[in-house]
Image (cartoon, rainbow, N blue to C red; front, side):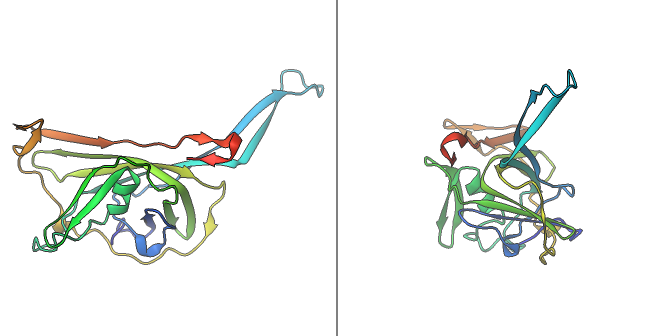
Amino acid sequence: MALYDSKKVVVAVKYGATATGTDAVSVTNEDVRVTHTSGSGSFKELNGKLGNKTTWMNTDDTTGEVTLESFLLGNDGTGAALDTPPVWDDIYKICGLDEAIETGLSVSYVPSQSQPSDLSSVAIWRDGRKRVLTGAVGTLTISGNIGEPIKQSAVINGFTTITSVAEANPSATSIDETLLLVLKSIDTVTISGTAVKAQSFTLTQSNDNQKQYFVGYKD
């Protein structure tokens, strides 16, 4: 488990359950934070102030978004533990991928044919303040250029509250740079049965939330 190595920001992600400090994941964007939006509107009120509007806000209808970025990492420095899920496995599942583990051989991911769990969550601690996203789903992007480490990012959406809560940052470890996966060639990518050579690649898997607030559902 890992996180941004300043120890000032901790990110935890959990598929199908509540995220805790033990679910910390590796990120490289130090400024990672939740941006939130509440249902709101305005109306003109005849209160003697022509042209002015009164604004209302529905804090029970607050959505949030967080962008996580990291490098794709190997399981360990020896190349063993091939059936060990990566640190980002919960993020992959939140972004709509199904996980398959073949004992002693591999962990693989394919696009899911079913709706992701609506119980998934993301927790972010920033200098002793915690904010949580519930009902989390996201869009995953994995990209690489020849001669560079492979990058991954996830834009995760969910439901949150207006204010954060005071909670000490959990302990976690930093990214092990010896596990970075540097892209040396792209001559084994197969598309519709054809092997492709390229200088770079990008893979995107998308999901989003659809609110039906008027009947009490957040999907």
